[in-house]
Image (cartoon, rainbow, N blue to C red; front, side):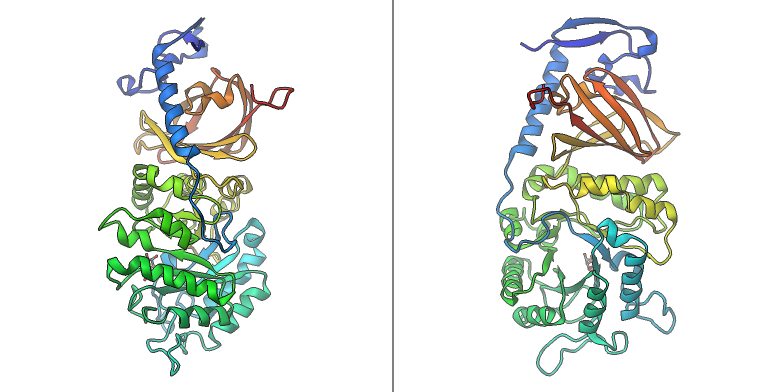
Length: 463
Ligand code: GLA
């Protein structure tokens, strides 16, 4: 039998909607009101903890299946990818600054080194669709559009490498890319060889114009072809995204084949897009989280931080939740012109530390209470990352009463944990007992991001 110390007092009205507050949360009282403290076994709290424990066991203890054995992406890939911000803008007469041409990647590479992006971990400069010429060359090889990439991709790769960065490129498993450029179907070996000769370090392989029943074969064949080149090339797939409309994808095979894989629709520069991605991921987390681990990651698509569509709180939410989801951090924005606050957020070492945690476990949503969503990611070093997202999009900042005892992984913090708040602002909350309470102020559609660290006893074990 487990005994819990609980505060027995009247609900102190931290939330406007008292009815929406589940029983286990209403066990907490307001310290100011002076609550009596008793020791007893509470059946509701006990049941909630057991349910949480079960969720945690299912989500955490399943060993990830075999990853693609190329030694790459041991932590989620970090870099920059042109698509969301620059799309298929090929009009270099009208819009020379923003069109898809070699200067765009050279300028981005320069800024990435000069402005601390590489130092923060953003390593890959990635080309997306609309780079190739509409015809293959006489030997059947892909070639870059000669007007927009007059120096060719190899020269561009040399340029990017000379700055200590890596180059990513885009192709498609089917007969055409989504933008209508030549696809790789029938040319997997040729294209893999061409990319390796050019010095490419990452391939984003899209799934347009392909019969869905052939997706698996196509993605596996390209994986083999890349491997045979002998060059280290991160393999970014969209295989499951194109299979989901027909059946549940085989994530064991996907993880053996790809370093990361898109599951869901393209991200747009809007909060509704980010929310849809989060909801889809949480709904399918039982399938997705066990597939993630060093060498292979679920890819919820690009970070759109620093663009036009997200408020700063929403940008913080995207950054926090992408770190919790162990997602590749591929920014799609204009690094040549980004506001200092977005830059600071994207370069936040504490958040990047969560994203790149060597344990490599993907986090998951643990529950929703009073329009607050709670997410958790197990970290190395007896730590957990917690994200609390305020899904209420009306009114002002709301207080979330954080009590370690109500966490799914509460046993981690029995009797105490050290708590660090990272977002919305950094502060050390210090040592917190299991039933102590901290009110976290969270803006509408904003997120509080924290780490909790188990306090070890003198024998080196948790209490
Ligand atoms: C698909 C992909 C996007 C982007 C475009 C390019 O929609 O999902 O990420 O690569 O194609 O055409």
